[in-house]
Structures are given as structure tokens and as C-alpha cells.
Length: 281
Ligand SMILES: [Zn+2]
Image 1 (cartoon, rainbow, N blue to C red):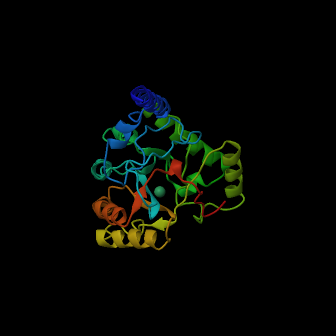
Image 2 (image 1 turned 45 degrees about the vertical axis):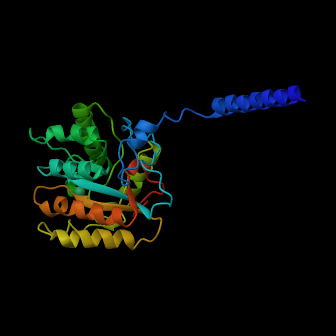
């Protein structure tokens, strides 16, 4: 009798140990991603991975920094055009403080003071993208050769400064701009498709393109109402400008981020956009 009890106890202990071994073997090392996940606690950053050298060909996976129990109210892609400018450091400062990544569509700026900003944008984890070299509508949209000469110019310039050959593009004025007419527009789109070059318009405007001294409160209202107005789960691509004569935009940015993050939105860079945002295609 005593022997049976002892045998059963040994059997049970062996079983428990075996189960423990199996469970241990099947459980992946929980620490693999923990440093990445615990790096920040603010829910607005969705990805801490470094940017790939060519944004057109590679997509980074979005790793949520915190594991939200509910899906986000929507995804906001802040896009900042026409820089770099003397205000670029302020944009970078605000975005770093708020732990938000954005996409900068830049032009060719030769000033000694501005040249380091291209690299700084990338090093801060943002997406750098092309927005023409000259931003001169009549020059760029003259014909297809003029367009691609300008495209090559900004691409080479950024390659020279950063070692990265970027392709993602935003048309100056957007694809609806009156200077960008058919058949030129169709010819450019065809070549973009051939060469797998992505281009991006926007579906929410901050309104800062309309006037230089736009009141920051108005920009906040435009962006927040615009994003919320697109409904639950939408992807909003927000147009803003980084220009010396538009200080209101960087001034409005902290509140824009706070209001949207407070409403449950997350922020990301355009190479992670799921549905293309094209005003014309
Ligand atoms: Zn522009």
C-alpha cells in the first residue's frame, strides 16, 4: 500500500517535470523584442526600426510600442514639405519630444546651414522623400525631359549628401496642380509605374500653404477636424510646410499631435501607408 502511494507520487512528479520541459521548449524567448517594445511608452510611435536606404522597395513592419487593447482611431501620416529651412530643427525637436515620426518632402537647398538637415531628418528616424530640386512649376512641368532632369537632380543631390538613393516623390503643388496637365501627367505616371516610383498626395490640408502668417490655432483646427472628419480607422495624410516664412506650422505641431494622440490616433511614415493617396492617377 505504502509503496503504491510512493510510486504514484513519483509518477506524478515525473509527469509534472515532463510537462514543464515541453512548455519550456515551446515558449519562445520573451526577451527577443522586449528592448524594442519597452523603449518608449507613448502610444504615438508605431515603429522604432531604422529606415531602409530605398524607401520604394522596402517596407518596414510596424511594431506597436505599446500593445493597445483596442485598434487605434486611425493612422496619421504627417508630411512636411518644401524644407529644409531654418525651422527644420524646431520640427525635429517637437517630433522627438512627442516621439512621432513624419515624412519630409525636401527640395534642393544649397545653404551651408541647411545641408546637414537632410541627414539629421533620416538619423532621427523620419522618412526623407523627394519634392523636386527647384520647386519651380513652369520649369518642372515644361515637358517630360525637364521633369525627369529635375527629379534626377534632387535624387543625386540627396545621394551626395546622405549616401541614400531615394525614389518616393510628391509633385510640387500635388498631382492636381494646374500646371501638371495631360498628356505630360500621364507620361510621368507611366514612367513612375515602369520604374516602381511611388508618389503621394494628401487628403487633409493644414491650410498653411494659403498664407504665411496663418494663426497656429487655425492650423490645429484644420488638421484635427480634417483627420477626425475622415472617420474611424481612416488613414490621413496631412499636408504641412517647413518654410522660413511659415513659423505657425511648427508652433501648431505640438498641439496637433497631442489632440490627435489624445483622440486615439497613431502616427506613422508614408512608406507604411496601406492605401495610396492620389488626387490623380
Ligand atoms: Zn511644395
